Length: 255
Image 1 (tube, rainbow, N blue to C red):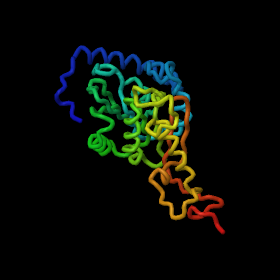
Image 2: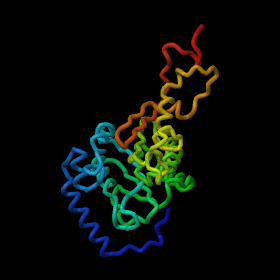
Image 3: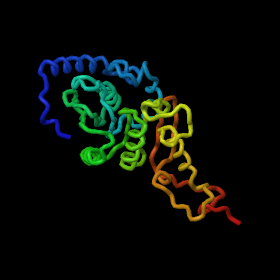
Image 4: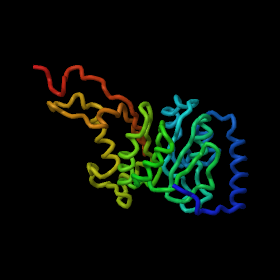
């Protein structure tokens, strides 16, 4: 997680700083997430249509002091490129700390309330160190590699670290159907795709209704309280999924 071996370019840093000052001035006073996203030129608005969904789910956190972790900075190998959505989140959440990880060096685009760690989203040791340094996680957004296996692995690593009442978001789920990303358009029941993985978790919502005497709840049975699917997006809410069945008792129907 150390950036000690990277030597930044002073001219590039100056250009980045001036651009940031200009964008921050334009974003000042804007409340609509889509408008803020347009200022910072994130592809979450325009190219994709994510910001209206984010607004409806994230509005209640707007003025809370929260920690947001977004996987993926953008800009690929260019150390001075990317971070557009991070800056959007910082503007939208004025009291939040914004964190991100990326496999490429991105330390030059860190700003006040934006911290970036260098490493892989599927490196359990690295991710554990990141979470320990951040502390409580209120919102997690996976906009990383979009490789199906990576998305599933990262969810299994990070969802348990998300606070109760928090939300975990996966973007760009279209890769669930793309073979080169580990997806499948032919067998729509392929368990290795992210869409089938998340669809399988919807059963956790109703685990109280399973007719399996002695059934032992999984972690996801206990902690997923709702899931919301949109075009290329999934929102997973965390809490205590302890609502009882109106008929079934201990996973068996009464005589």
